[in-house]
Image (cartoon, rainbow, N blue to C red; front, top):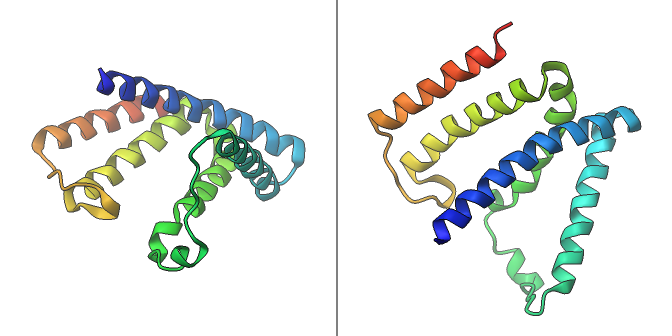
Length: 149
């Protein structure tokens, strides 16, 4: 039952990314600058997270000195998120939601294959198989059909 909930949450998160691409693109048009609109988008997200954390009963922040012990690459998630937001506001309005999201998913799948195969950034090793390769090829065929004019 927990897996079903995780699958549903993941589908909803994927839908949220599609909506986010549109809302952030519209924010950029209203603000006029892709970087400034991305800053505003992240600020709203940070504010939401801070409100959520303040409502939690057991929110134990780590000690400041322990933060300096964390390996540098574990901090880049925020930068990768910022990169994604900037690309979203620049590219999504030009190529459309379906093309943008399908290309995003294709990039995620290819990267994920290697992350799993080599056990990178904390993922358990799950070797690339012929079935997975065929699935990715099918996805790329779908992306081609979606983005074809």
